[in-house]
Length: 126
Image (tube, rainbow, N blue to C red; front, side, top):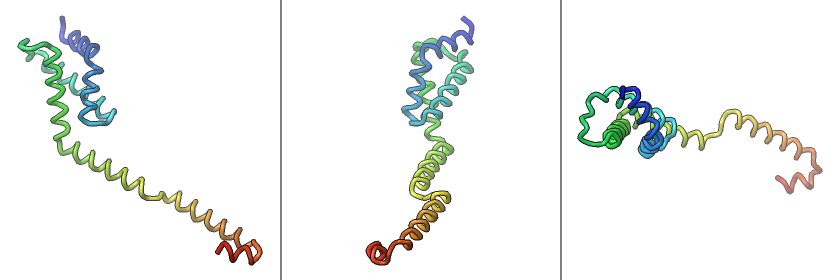
């Protein structure tokens, strides 16, 4: 069997489980999909180093686990992961400029409507 046929077979049989494994490390679908592609590329490039001391399945999983661990330990991943977390926190706690303008406009409109009320009702509201 040629190497591209072997990789195609591995991808068909183990693609979903490798994707799940990668997701368990990074907890992000897009990143897990990228890692899965990288893992299969690495397997294709290293296919000639497979000695047969273990099953192809075991060899593939060992490559996948090592690749995922390397990714999680990488400086870039930690920086991006922390940056995304901080970014989500700030965006969820800050009001956008558009929202501020809408809120201000609504407040002014409400204030003007209150001023049209008779004085006894205005006093109660204020």
